[in-house]
Image (cartoon, rainbow, N blue to C red; front, side, top):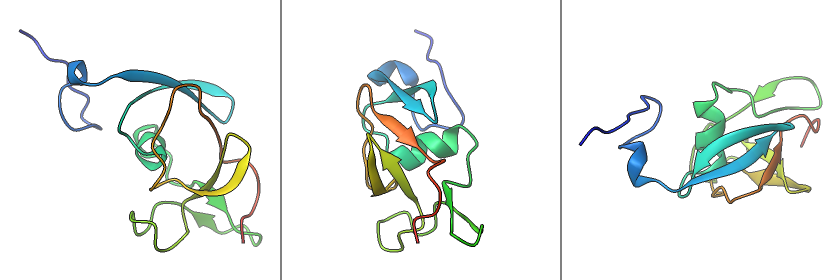
Length: 100
C-alpha cells in the first residue's frame, strides 16, 4: 500500500479527513485536526497580519500566549490561529488590517 506524504505535514495524508476552507478568498484543502496556523504555514504564509504601524506578525509562541497570530475567522476578528482548529467551510481572512 502506497502512502502520500506532504513534507509540510506530519504523517500520511490517507489517514486524514480533508476539509475545504477559504483563506483570503481562495479555496484551500486542509485536514481535520490542523490549526489555522498550520494551514497558513503550509501555504507558505509567514505573515498572518500587520500591526497598525505595518509590522508583520505571524506564529510566534504557537500556544496561545502571545496574540501575534490573530486572524479573522468567519467574520470574528482577533482569533488566535494557533489555537483554532479548521472546520469545513471556515473562512479565514488575514487582510483585515491591524489587530493592535
